[in-house]
Image 1 (cartoon, rainbow, N blue to C red):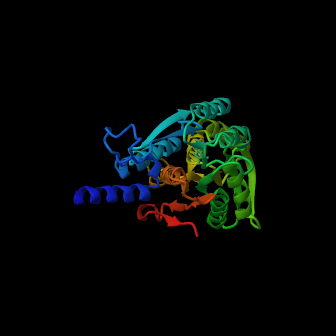
Image 2 (cartoon, helix red, strand yellow):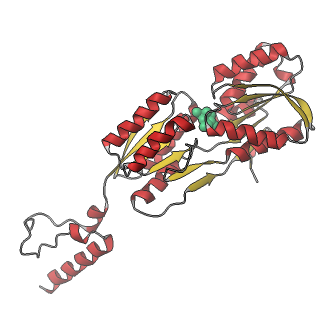
Image 3 (cartoon, rainbow, N blue to C red):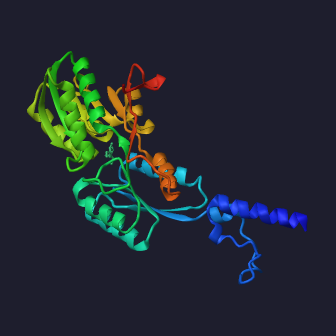
Length: 330
Ligand code: FRU
């Protein structure tokens, strides 16, 4: 009798602790219709199940495959999370409808890495209006109608690239800038940061083009640059696929040895490998934030306060320090 009473007290305390008193059935209530049901323990009642929608801009680039893998690896640590991944295949309209689908499905939380800022702003706001918290990853939307933004500081990376290039070229030279999609915020910030970084030098940007983050586009643009300018000293590409495309164009023209190549992303199997092979002179790390997105999603679903912005760090890798793990940006 005494031990039954002790068990009862312990269970009530556990229910109170879990904050689910109303969901707990101690089996003592005379009007309870569920007295024959097994009594749920505090841990099973606390372990609610959640569905998280992940809207990815495309999976045609290794960096985004890595982002989804990082999201999945972190989500796999939680047995109560069900992930639904949608790949917009670099189609803004498709990504808009993916967000709409997640809203009508009633997911508990949305993670989105939007292709472009403006067209994805409205669907994200609609999700928020429907009571679905939204984590925006890597590329931003406009305004402030989202729960949290996670990403590295692209302006800072662009500026660090500009400063490194200024130093490496001794303050002068002819540069090609191959820009990421300029309707996406990383493209805009990597461009404006870079301009700040080279300010006050005699570096000339003789050719610039939007290669939309894509290696084949970068290669074509570089072919034009090579045909127009006999003297090119360096290519600054907003991502490693862009820098690699430019390198291939220069190599085909027999000019790759006279030109330096700088990119951003630093995936081990991509940018870092290119630096080790002597293809790129430098790459700046751009972390995917996939793990952080799930860690914060869990807090949001648990009704905890999270910061509006999480800024991830970056590292610079050059041939001098790539084997030692690069160096952090100050
Ligand atoms: C992949 C990618 C990366 C780049 C990021 C910017 O789609 O182009 O290479 O760093 O997006 O959002």
